[in-house]
Image (cartoon, rainbow, N blue to C red):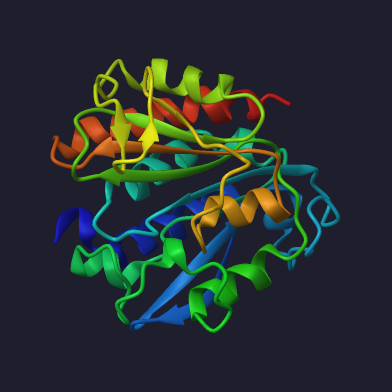
Length: 259
């Protein structure tokens, strides 16, 4: 199963959490699999229950990182593990929230959808969905350093690109420059047949009617000032895609680690 074997991913995160002092908490169960959230910082190191408000557990607020909401996009889940493992010491300075894989059934099945045929990235307005309900309980009233980062892939993609929702896409531009060492930016004028992209950046308009139930839109409304989502072309070699994701994380989240 390789890149789609969720038990291996969970085992690796358990080992990292134990070594680094992160807190790994089950937030939901769906499709026969547990879904986990990770918190870093002082709260995680002491093994205490995280506060619903960022920073109240002892560490100042950190960033938000997520991967694997679409199970046929595996590069992000392994890149996130690699990146966090290499930067565990810095992550402990603040309370970061990491979602290692929001759709484990989809990862195992190599499917965009969950076990009920739902696109979880169109379901954040539906509290009856177990992963969404568990995610909202886990996140609580936290506020995050900007931008939050989501890792995705595009099976139709001809290169890397990044969505950005917020006031200034400078961080996303920095990320695309770093990731382009491994995969060139997309040459398509539009992505999803509607969003204009230039230089690998798709700046989403804040005044348009939002796509209902998207993770990033929910984050901007309630938890963070900006969100960026990197997309790698899923038909390229897995190793290249993982490297591109790690480079993007380094360029976008790295400065937040230094705060």
